[in-house]
Length: 373
Image (tube, rainbow, N blue to C red):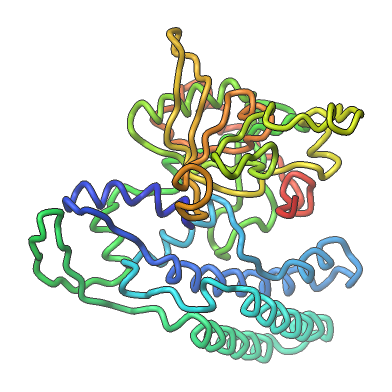
């Protein structure tokens, strides 16, 4: 959410001549968890014919909801619920310390999911199941309100520009606020490009159940070689459009100076051994994968316009890295960058035409999509 919202911030800051502006992540977090809860319950009911030790049922109950997500989750939630300024729905203790919220929400959902699974197995009347599920979602809503506060239906807001001039109050809904300042936003304007060497390049893949909204879009990506992704990312940066990007941030990270470089640490020399796995090997053995999203927002190139350094804006605060930014080498990009979301207008027609290929469905428990490296 930090990365997605930060990709939107420059537009509203520039259009309203603001010194700064922040969106409420708490507002989106509320609806993200609410929608994920609904998706989990629906998925359990869709799979009730499977035995309880089936791989899909096992995965669902192990992962009813979570804090994480990818680009499509952000796009799904802002499209459905809009956005609000931070002052309209501020952070709470539990929005910034989410462990207990997640723990109790998962416990509640597992309890509810088991009840619905058994009701479906027993062929209970449809009306009874629908009533049970409706009441379960009421309980989920109430829990989220107690932890995070109640999301606004409408609100009054005025801007104060960089010169200190105060605008008139205007009434908004979260959806109308989003549409006023981002009228052209559409998930269909963007494509997620992935570098996953364990799979065939130039194919489109979709991860089952990897979304947050029942009617929303799953995680869909086009798999490309790293060098081709860089061409499109460079074009986006040249046009002042930063991008959602995700990587294995913990690998070869020097947190004090904010650098990511394959040569930052020489563990082989230190320990007198070899670490010979390729990127594909690290993915297949669960040693590496995409673990953190940041805003890809800058690049240095040589005289031939070839990138040699890139930069992220991170979400861990200004005291981490170099004033909150992480700089990484082009070689590190090859080894530990996994996905970048790019506006289609910066991608050539030949590549866009690949999106018309038949989608290959992947299971959510695939090694590439684990988040705990």
